[in-house]
Amino acid sequence: MKISIIGSTCHTREDSMLFAGHAAGVCYMPDSYEALMQESQEKTMKRAKTTLESGHHSVYDHLVYSLLIEDIPKILAMVLNNEEFYTTSEKSARYTQMVLTGDERRLYDKWKEIFFNEIKARYGERFLKFYEGIPRAERQIEKLAMENARYMTGLFTPTTMIYSTTLRQINYILSFFKHFANEERLDMFGATLAWNMLQFCAEIPNEVIVPGLDADLKGRRISLFSDLSDVEEHFGETYCTTYWASWAQLAQAQRHRTLSYSVFLPLEKKPYIPEIIKYNPDIVEDWKRDMLSISMFYPQGFMVRVCERGTYENFLLKCYERMCGNAQLEIALQTKRTLDKFHEARPDLVGDEFMRGARCTFPNFKCGKPCIWHGGEREV
Image (tube, rainbow, N blue to C red; front, side, top):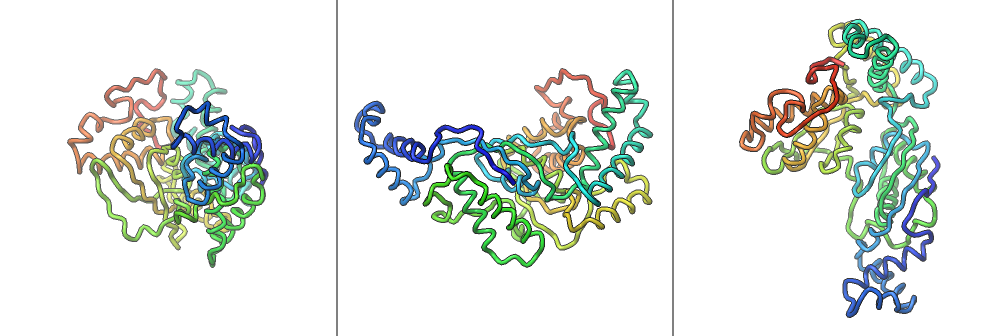
């Protein structure tokens, strides 16, 4: 793993401390900001130190850093993407081939070919007509084949991302990771994840490490993992629901940052079955065998129990994004199931106008792109 600073508000740790000290001074300044900037550096640094000791860490959120993180395991990227505040740009496993070796590479290539043939057999004529020619049609079929073969890639497969967040959040994440790693880990998944977290901590540039700026004062921990034992579903102005999803779907769901997600890892290793192969029991059994054969890599196709929380307004925003023929099919179908529950429980909030089909049927939505799926009806 390699972590580099590729953009920042301040260039040195001292500059960051001065900036935070001035920000803290605004809260109580008797005069103007210009006057505050004329005070001695010693006074500003003393105030910055006081904020560290008192836990008034929000002043360190004014400082933003963009990190290029190379060879980060997919699961660690997901842990990061579950914490707020951040912006991320990550290499897509839907549209690009990841760096794979051994059995992961062999099974990814095997199932990419199987999915390509299944999609072409089922929808080849539709693709050929829509994309007006074999080359473009086959490129699009290949993309969908890659999207489904991606379930065979492991959670510890390396990826690359740009991760932008605040100075406070970076230091809080370091404390989250160190706390997670210090807990006793009896399972291989937790132990491997903990080791990667320590690698992340070791690679973080010194410029962004501020002693005393950590989450222990407030007892905060990683938000992704939970036992979900006392979670109850409800739908109203706010909602909470649980469902089974693959890790790949969860990664898609995390892009809706106004919603909250946590997961429970079951003991049973249960593979997700893509819709395009469900009709053929022999292919399904082959899929299960192959995925279980690489269980030591924790494929993204393994299912976890997900808890999703938020407001109904933000859930509707998710529907406007995910209930689309061009979205990942698994998350599109799951979003529809949650929408059905919402409509049944609170039709006054989620009315019939949202129950006619894909997002192109929703009120106040206009899609300017031609669609091969005619409103989202597909199996791939």
